[in-house]
Image 1 (cartoon, rainbow, N blue to C red):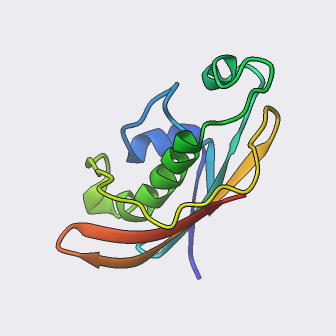
Image 2 (cartoon, rainbow, N blue to C red; image 1 turned 60 degrees about the vertical axis):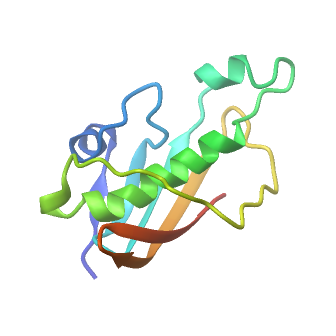
Image 3 (tube, helix red, strand yellow; image 1 turned 90 degrees about the vertical axis):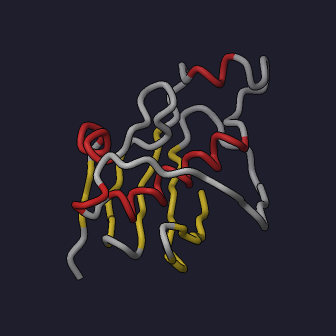
Length: 128
C-alpha cells in the first residue's frame, strides 16, 4: 500500500500549526484518508517543560491530545484538495493516561479515521 512520509518542513505545507505549537516532528506513514503515524522528539528545552512541573517536568496531557489531533488531521489534510484547510476539534472521549511523557522521550503517535461524513470526522488515536 502506498503511503506518504512528511518531515517537519513538509508537515508545514499541509497544516497551519507552527512552532512552538506544532506538536509533531515527523509523519512517517500517512495512508491518505485512512491512517497516520509519526512522532515528536521531546527535547529538554521544550517550552512546556519549564512550567509543567518545576522539578518534575512532563508533557501536559492536553498537549499529548493536541499531538494526536494534529497527526489525525494529516489523514484529511494530505488529500490534495484539503491542503492548508482548517480543522477544528469538537469533542474527545474515552481519554486515559498511563505514563508521564518526559524530556528526551520520543512520543509515538498513531491515528486512524473511523468515519467521515459531511466534513466531520471521527478518529481514534494513541500516543506511546
